[in-house]
Length: 282
Image (tube, rainbow, N blue to C red; front, side):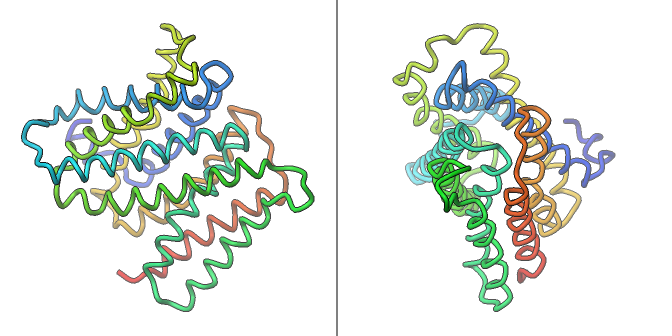
């Protein structure tokens, strides 16, 4: 986007559009599962995102040091694991629930970095949200899907930790584009050896490009606009609404209707995330 658009486009609508784009992309990706499978869809999305980012940032990989390659590798592996496992999770459970449970990873990271008594309440609220989803009577939500979403959230937390360190060692554009290429190398075998990519043709390639744009290129640009205009805490509070947008996107695009307890679970995670962000020390 041009510098003029950065000056005129409002920050909060940019964040909201970013979340709509991400969750819309996830809905389209999930609709591809019956054709390409979770592994094939993840490989297509990450691979095409890598191509788009390399074309945009044009990283000079020959100048990267061994230490920079190490950071980019860790960043890329976390990125790949986070996305691949999340896709396997939402193959089993509704999108809104998957987003809410994955969000527990960054929330836990934020709570561990604080020493406030109040944070125990936010942690308890998040635990209540998870408990509301557990099929205690062996019915309802797929337990494996729940576990996979939580594992994806753990990799999201690692992704945040590495992301905070890699920017001190590597330029943002090179970190993102090289990291995405490494993520592609890590994730591609899952798509190839599972046979999910055997049916890939021009039509599905085009749909995959749409997923890559909606899930990576568009929200990345919108987030940069927003971060240049509003405090990071405000940005984090707005991003806490991701599970709600995931549930709405699942309802609109995938006809995924959630139960009352599942909606309450999502609400618990959102409130816990917003609360932990608002009362976080600067």
